Length: 92
Image 1 (spheres, rainbow, N blue to C red):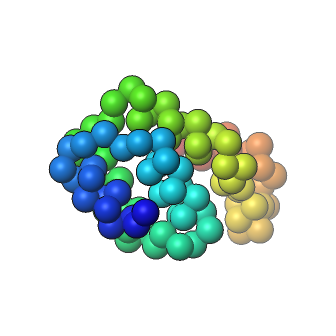
Image 2 (image 1 turned 60 degrees about the horizontal axis):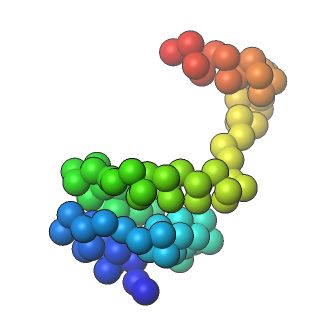
């Protein structure tokens, strides 16, 4: 399986399988899928939309990936703890 084929598949408005979604997310997290490739896939998803099953599979894969954004940069730059940084960020 190649990311190019997955991007082309979604570009052509076809439904992505769970295996294709898993491959794209896993590849992005381990660095084999580059940021510009993920951007192309997301653009194709934005233009063509997703089915309920695709949305479910993508959401579950992202939720179970154990990767999360941390607000450590806020503490270093501005002296906020994570909760203060999150509250300040959400109020924008």
